[in-house]
View 1 (cartoon, rainbow, N blue to C red):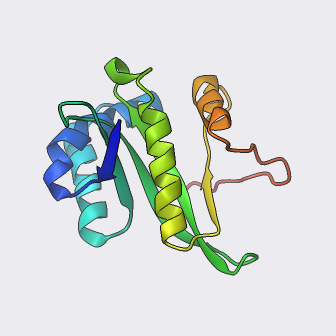
View 2: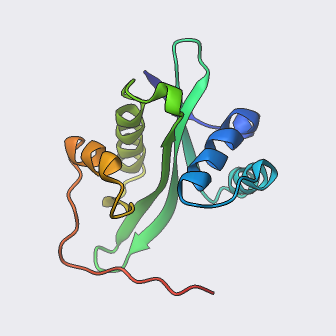
View 3: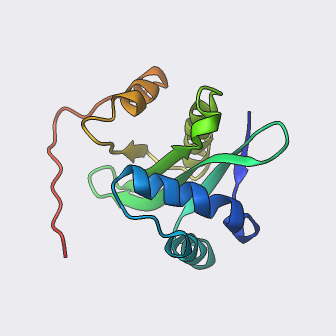
Length: 147
């Protein structure tokens, strides 16, 4: 399994995957919106998208990292906000390859931490994260305020 940083040239392959990711989290299908969102992130340098490639170099999954900082650590951190593998490619270890690539990118940037959140009922993803060395946060509750 190979991974690489995605570019604007990958938008046509990434957009359906990103739309699938959004649908998994109960958002209505909207391929144009998915493509526009990713295009803006890449054009503005707001995020880093890592693509997983199959043996024919087709993109079968992705993860999207957003840069942030920790005041307590006084250091850069990365938020692994999205991870998705095409249903037909699940079980190929693409998710592990993406997680390893995300760790490598974070380390290379001098980050102190890589963080993620997932739904309480997403036990399949939780198992993947834990098998890959991630630890569930026990000290803090996270809150959101919808605007």
